[in-house]
Amino acid sequence: MVTTLRQSTGVAATRILGIGSFQPEKVVTNDDLSKVMDTNDQWIRDRVGIIERRFADKDELLVDMAVTAGERTLADAGVEPSDIDTVIVPNCTMPSPIPNAAAQVADRLGIKAAGAFDLNAACAGFCYGLGVASDLIKAGSAGRVLVIGAEKLTDVVDPLDRANAIIFADGAGAAVVGPSDKPEIGPVTWGSAGDLVDTIYMRDHRYIYQEGQSVFRWATTKIAPVALEAVAAAGLEPSDVDVLIPHQANLRIVEAIAKRLRAKGAREDMVVADDIKYSGNTSSASIPMALDHMRAAGRVSRADVVLAVGFGAGLSYAGQVFIAP
Image (tube, rainbow, N blue to C red):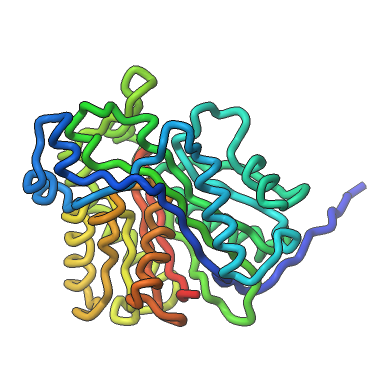
């Protein structure tokens, strides 16, 4: 006897319905850091391009930030909590793997009985989450998905480690993904370099550590081709890209990726995200947060072609093209 199982059917295309973000109120400048470690404003600007960043208070949790970003995103998308059936929270800084963030966030947002799971691809997390959300909807496994990249990196950074404490910060950024009459989210192009896993890891299971120069060389040489692969997968040319949003790891890395893309045909007037200057490196939150900030500043408009590419610990990477909401 041959048994045939029924398959769910979804929609042909998806889009981002709305975006939103949240940052803690506490602003930490380079001069503030120079009071507690051997560093200074010019050294930090030259090394990573950061001017200031936001730190959460001790009792301000990753879940709290994700909820606020989620509320703003639902409002921006014009949907009710009852319209969402799946919540994905990419992150790598939950204080404990159990319980996950997503179920807590869904409940606090009033999204009942949602499929809810965390996703850990570190700084590539939002791109992974966006790809998964889009494919779930196209497969018929979900109707509308809320993806929230959220991180409290100050919980896992040695505050006296000037190589890392100057870089990382806290925040959350989110998107609602739903069905569309035409494709507005391109295929995700992702992968990993597990042979380089020791370049970013948790030292003594407590503090994040990275081999800065090794990561820098890898990111500046390997990530632009991933971005170009995402452009090709979407059926576009580099010259079609209006906005480039790489993970905000380091301003020098961002600029190097943009330079390589322009050498392959991207336009000189392509807008390049530089949110790291005032937000620091917020891992899985950095891409949606940058998008939200750029839209608020008028640097991104509805229907712009956006190329996003995330990369980080794992080493994991992912990119996709989408149309700005």
